[in-house]
Image (cartoon, rainbow, N blue to C red; front, side, top):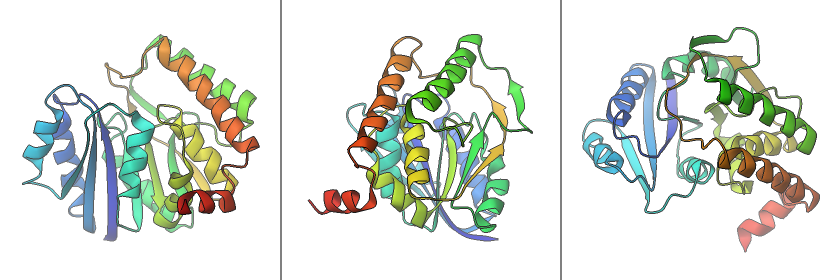
Length: 251
């Protein structure tokens, strides 16, 4: 049995599935970890997501972080990670597009000495249970190319899968430095991790592409591209240097 884990779930308009999905996560964790916490960060949902989360509080070890306004996935994942308490911390998407049952092999790589284990669609062994829509496939490949061109980050094949597991020490070297609030934050996570010389393992997964997505086809690719330039500019300014990060946290 593993010791402890913190699981962060960003939530935005998830009322239809959040109750059953968090119950599924808790049911998976309970026999495998001595202690666990689930941190659900409600990102200004306009439906009954918050009501469903409060219903869950009586049934599972759940901590709710509520933002009255929509802040963006990157911002709420950062808030959730920084409010966690256990030695292993992870985040995954609320729709369980990558199921929690994949966690075991990620934990094995953390035990093998990796600082971070991340899901990847571009390494051998990927199993696709529901095909991705054509426009999403174009967006994924386009963003990957832009990431390589703009921030020269080619060693990690896939930064964008919403299933990442960290040693706490590694997470605390990364998340205080993050600046990107929306979907490109995953690229910033990996960029900063590489700046910190952390050991990263990409793992194939079983991917259940959900029929619905919060990604906006026209606006979000543009914003993600601008965020890549922001990461590049931050790097030029030295904002990801550990000494600069320490000074900023003290101000």
